[in-house]
Length: 138
Image (cartoon, rainbow, N blue to C red):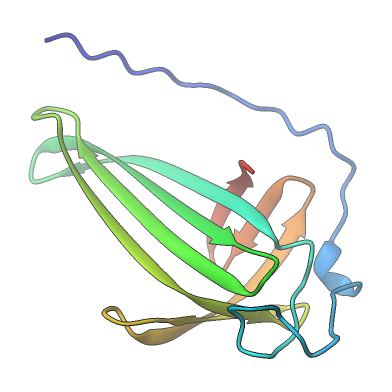
């Protein structure tokens, strides 16, 4: 079985804009699934980060996808693909989110309960979430 790996380089020509320096929706309502906090509309969308690494000697492709929805719901999907064996593992966590313009807080629902908090900066189609850079994909 042949496996093709394609690498794509994207050049962001969007002017530098740091959206989280204000302009977020702080009306106290986050819609049907939210937790009642502020929603930064600039964070709404799907953000993806992909890394290729070696795990136990096998090349592995790991894709992390954050989806921040306008109604205050969020999901984290992590897809790990072992390039050598073609085995894939997917983990999905759902929850709610709020953002205050510099920090986003995600509260996960059962069975994967817990809360994660990250600083964030949006620059065009790039999101720096904590120390990890993501690209807007939706």
